[in-house]
Length: 70
Image 1 (tube, one colour):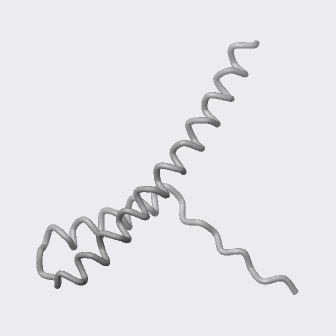
Image 2 (cartoon, helix red, strand yellow):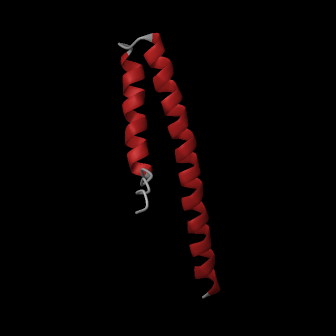
């Protein structure tokens, strides 16, 4: 039996998680260490979102090019 492959969160899910982190940081009621942890998690999400958005843009370009050929 093969181990289950974890499903990567979608763009919308990552944006929700990022918004939660931003709210937590803006509230200012967490410790400095928690702030650094949140910042690090937020930056990882930003990087992941950038990659996800790039993939979607490439798919859109491919689909758009296919429409031009018709």
